[in-house]
Image (cartoon, rainbow, N blue to C red):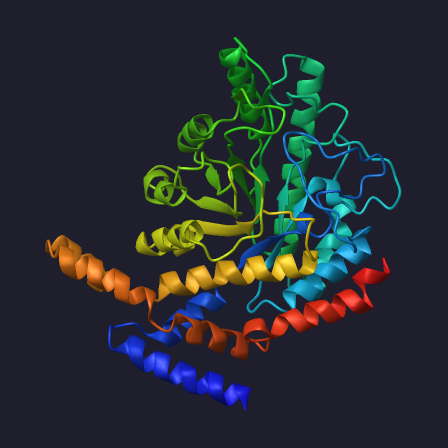
Length: 417
């Protein structure tokens, strides 16, 4: 009965959208090609699988201690697959280097190679999941407050070697899956209090990046990510947005926009049309900051919706990669995966269903009233019926039905850990 109601609601929505020139079948097809890169670190609070793992550090923090977090690679994979089964579409998995399959062996980060990720490559093939990657400069005895910008040449070279090896791993992943692996480079480097060596640190970071990127890796793509500040590094961030935007533009790199890495009143959405004039592609890390980079679970809020609207309005769907980056340990972690992923999809379906062409024509004709009116009316159109149909066609729970499945998984699996 419910499937019949969903289908009937979709038929009404399809006809309603057709009246304003929107083909909902085309939108459903576009949504099927919208692949989120799910972040592995939501399932275990950024712990990873290093034998010598230390406490989480490097300007980031995971809060909460909800029972049932993944304790090993098998549990993490099971949680990810459960989450994926409740999210319509086909999605990627974004791995940090600290999530290698080390099998109890002590492997320092300047020694890592693709062999420690071979089981991930095989897992990805078995589960129709392409992989993305990240270097990991935090939670390590040599992290300190400076890594790639460290004046100590020995420490700096350690992290340069680590990042070079990560690029090689990402390239191996790309070759194995027949699709470029997107590798993000973010380092926490900064100062807790006042500093007079800003130019020195940034010059060292630039030199490190130049050395890291010197060798071409054809089956991976490099992303670089800035930040306002990190915990314990509040006064100065070496890899600021200005630094990485300039570096990306000059060196033809992908710029990462992390929605939690800006000042509270700053709009990440507004950056899409600005930086795409100068960089080839963008990587998104979609999170929800509350006053700071708190990495709350993504919801369908105005900033996230505006971000996806700007991508659609710029006709940049094929120039943007879509990653998630939140780690909430205070609630059911699988539920957090599903809620955040579906929220991002809902923002995209709303952006794709906007009658942008007609609104743009009104604006260019100087019809301010009509522009504002249609933007407002579009908010109330039955976009949710289109998303429900998308879920139905992908054979995943529609609406709130996934809550019961997450609760059952908690009873049967995560609560027993």
